[in-house]
Each structure stands twice: as C-alpha cells, then as structure tokens.
Length: 257
Image 1: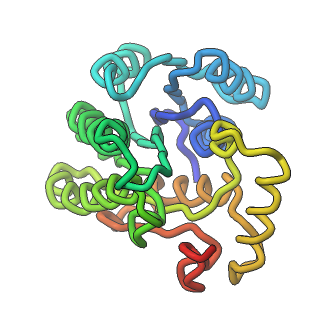
Image 2: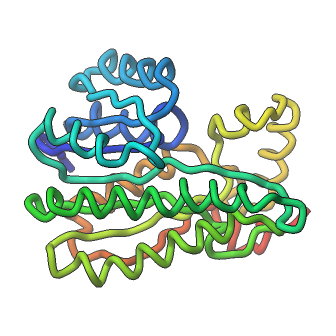
Image 3: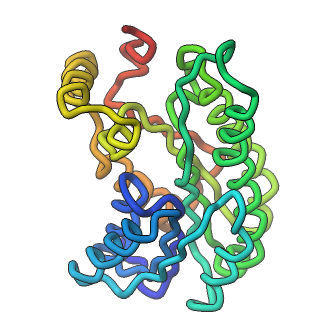
C-alpha cells in the first residue's frame, strides 16, 4: 500500500488518533500531509515527530475547524496543488447530562462534530473530484448506541447519517466517504478531561476485561483501518460505518457501569 504523491489532510492532528494517522500516512505510506489543530505547540511537535521518522515535512495549519474551514482547504491546495484524502477527525466531547446542560453545549458539539465536517467536505469536494479521492469521518460508537444522556451521542449519530447521505451525492463524482466509530481508545482526551493516571488505568482495565478481545483500543487500531479505507483496496466501499471497539458493542458493555 502506497500513497506516494498523494496528499492527506487530517484535522485534530495535534495528538491522539489524528496525530497517529498523519504520522502513519507520512512515514509508512509516503503521503504528503497537512495537519490541522488549535494547539500550535502540540501541532509542531507532531510535525517534528513525522520529520524525525523520515516523513516529508508536513504542512502545519493552526486553525479552528469551526471558523477556518476555507483557509484550511485553501492553504492545503496552495501548498500541494491537490487533495486526495480528507480525514475529519477534529471533535469535541462533553459528558453533561442533557437536562443539566446549557443549550450552548449542544451548539458547540454540533458546530464542531457536524457542521465543521459538512463545511470542510463541501469545500474539499472540487479537489477530491479531480483525484478520485475520499473522505473518512471519525465518529464514535456513541453514534450507534446511545451513550448515557449526553448530547455527544446525538452529534455523532448525525455525523454517521451525514456519511451515508453524502455517499449518494459524492459517489457519482468519483468520491468515496466512510466513517469509523471507535469505542474506548487510549488517547490524550482523558488527560485533557483531567483524569488521573489511576483513574485512566482503572477504566482501561475495566473495559479491557469486558471486551471480547481482552484489551482497550490503541490509536494504531484506528489508523490501520483508516489507511485501508483510504486506499485503492477499498475502491468499492462507500457510505459505511466501521466500529473499532474490540467487540465491546457485541458484548453490550458500552453503557454498563
């Protein structure tokens, strides 16, 4: 599998799933990558790690996907002249129960997890059409199974439906679009939410024991799937949702305390 000469744009690429998939495309598959994030320091660190491991110098775009979609696409095209893969990974999470939450939380979730994806996909379409490119949306298992009382599940369900609807609209243009729906994955999101090492390990052990595959997910589990979906090997796959959860949904352990 090779992406030499191809351009991959990854949002939310300063850490976690986004950073790992950008690193993989650049260092293992030979792609040129544009990485997007709000935290300039972490984004630059991710870029340095890519260069250190032999990947071509990434285009670093410090931006907010909810405000800077046009600039993100324009800078990518100005730098590389083409776009082959758009990975909509940037997202926002909130665990406030709906009845306790201000409507502003819903607005922020939908703005980040849905509206920005729609906007970026629309703006990228003319360029993806030229390359027979594809789009990968990073959703969540919470978009398939209602997770507690959170608005988050609603936003990810909308993202899943957008993926399916757009498969019909983009297909005739030669563009594929799919979504991955991760379960519990070890990422920096837990640190950002203020979890201690003890709290994280307790959750990881608990979920891992319940999962049929006996462990919690790693970012590499999502990266390998996205690389496949973006490749020519998946040329007849579009409008699909792929769960990456170690069997957690099959074991019905997602909403268990």
